[in-house]
Structure formats: C-alpha cells, structure tokens
Image 1 (cartoon, one colour):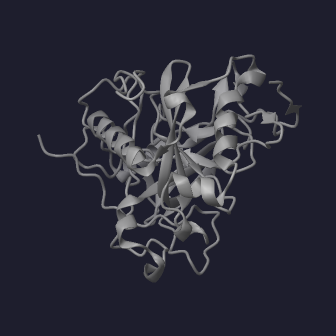
Image 2: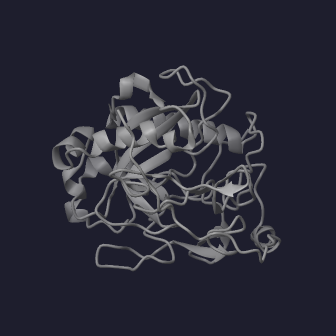
Length: 328
C-alpha cells in the first residue's frame, strides 16, 4: 500500500479575522462562518489560500515547514527549534467561555459549539479565572485512539485531536492557524480517558525566543502551570462532577516527552485516514490527503458545505456570567 502523504507543510499565520503585522506572513487559511453564533447551527468552515474548503482536522499539516518563512524572522529563530514547530488550530480564544471544538464527526470538521443534554456548553468561571485561561485549540493530523491504551497512562484516548494550551501574550481569534513551539505536556485523565494537554507558545509571540522547555514556563510565567493544573482539576465541578485526575500525579512532562506523544498521535491519525483502524463515527473526509480512501474533490467539498442547513431559531448568546468559589 502506498504511504500516506499529507499535504506539503506550509506557514499558517492566521484566520480571516487576524490582522497582519510586521511579524506575520500571509494568512494561508481563512474561515467562513455559517449559522448564528451561540446557536447549535453555528459552524466555522476552513478554506485554504486558493479559496477551497478543507478540513482543519485532516488537511492542515501537523508540522510547520522550516523552509518557509512562517512569519518568524530567521535571524531570531534557533535552527534546532524549527523541527519543533507545529500548526495549532485555535478553537477557543483566551478569557471566553463557549466550548468550541473541531466537529470530528461532521464532514470537513468545522468548528462548532459543543452541546450536551440539548444545551450549548460553556466553561464555568471559577474564581479567579474568567473562562479559558489560555488560547485553546488542537494540533491537526493527530488523534487519540479510543481503542488503544496509552502506555504512559494505561488509559485509552479520548477520540479527539490532541489539545493545546497556548500561553502567549496575545488573545487569538477563533479559527486562527498559528505556528507554536511545544514546551511540555500534562496528562489529564478525563472520566477514564487519556486527554493530553500540550503547553505551547505562539512562535510569533514577542517573548517566544525565551521559551524552549517546560522549565521556562515556571521561570518566566510563575504560577501559570499551577493555575493550569487547578483549572483542569476543577472545571467540571460546577456541573456536579468530581475533580479530574492526572497521570504522573499532575506533573508536567518536558518537551521531549511531549514530542513523543505528538508523534504517537500523528501515527494514530495516519492509521485512521488510511482505514487501518476503527474510526467509529469520526468523519475522515479530506481534500488534500490524496492517498486516503476518504479523499474528496473540491467540488464535493463545496457541496458538503452548501448542504448544511440552518435554523432561524434564536438561542442564548450569553457567556457564562456566574462565578464559582470552590472550597478546599
């Protein structure tokens, strides 16, 4: 069987709402909103620079090509770190509450708001935090296989792309695609499933050159890792659920460990796209992974998007306003 050939890695400098600046290259991915925000119909579809619909899950390369500009001044970039630049799809901007995520079970995998028990989901404000405390998103072309036990945690994956907590200084926009430097990783055990949380920083952040590994987060952003651990521990408590558990007693593992997890989840994604494993309800439709049996044409992709219907029903557009004060 022919090897899986993902599309050639390119610089990903921002979504449609990103404003180009002196440190940014041209945005190679754009977004198109359909439906009413804060409704169950709302979707954010992705397009490449040619204006063709693509899947952010399958068609955006995992790695940033070090031969491209990437929006990073080469004179400031360390050569050994080019190998550790990955594309991140931003789902949730920092300080917002709506639980937005790549719709893994829908054609072309647009971003949508998660729904549970018929209601849109929002992250609770747990004092002293307002919503998400990082720009939150995922690495494309990764998948945590729910049928495969992680050797580090002895728990199976959560059936999603691997999550990213971006700790840079800028509040990013939903749908932006940015190059990130991976610094470390936290092993969350969410209701018995392995749910890795990568810690990364926007490679275009003014302070990115200071961050090379997880220890630099402790040094230059004191308290951030502790806040991150606590956030993931208690974020479901306002829903009446118990505190979450962690692998390694909540220890953040370093960059080298994180890179191995990324490599493993990328291999799982390859197997998924080549139909070598049970993907269940995961939708693998893609436009650019030509060797995949799930490949579709540009015209077919456009038809899939245009076939999505929307309701005129109004839904709440209220962000979570309540504050929760949790006891020890």
